[in-house]
Length: 318
Image (tube, rainbow, N blue to C red; front, side, top):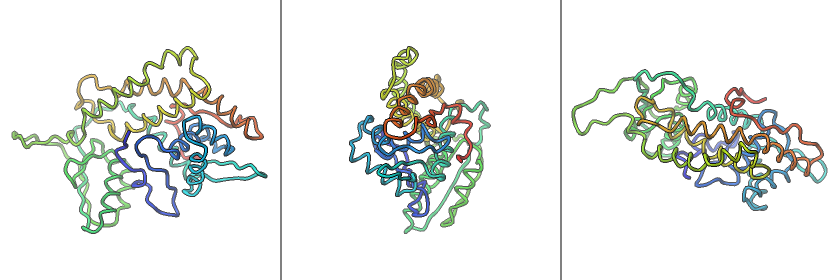
């Protein structure tokens, strides 16, 4: 599954900053490692023996060498920090990475919970860059996509939301070129050339993504309810559904339900996600603790799988 943005457009190639891995087709070893570590240690940045991270990645289908390379690269990116006791090394999230992931987790967990009706206004951002600054233009487009905008025209991006502090902060950091932001209602024109701002999103394609997600995960719910999914299978399913669901806030930034087709599947997709992710928390946590105990000196009681409600309520990590 190809993500509509590159994470490195959002976290620039700055050696002094945290650089989370980019989302590519499928799940890379680095993406899986970040998801696995965050899912069970984000609340307290607990240490994980490196051998336990490798074992979790191997259970997810990543080879031993690729798993170790992923850990090493995440350390160089300042996503993980290390500790060594004799021949054994352990890793945990850095403070900066934990803060970024906590904010991202809250964004994902709060998705599809907004009750307010739409006020009918669009936020528009128009920009112009010098011709030789293609890289910065591309980075700004990635930022806008991540912030819930879509291109109505090449340099005119739209969002149905009022600009929040994060939008203002991210766009204020753009110091090159020119930019204008304004709020407006659409005026329909009686012409075939008229384009509704909602057409900036491929609504039909988004609906297909939702439908595929529901078809993939809904049949698992009876087995989860019966306690038939456990061990490595519980961890793997929980990781996979997070990897899939976290794309939706980007491709469908809670577009106004008033503009969506009937029976828009956003709410059902969230129900399925919560049922699977929370329903597998206990067996997945038990399995991760077992691996930590096997490869470390502690019983792994500091390992805890967070729920979607805890993610939604998260503040900056300690």
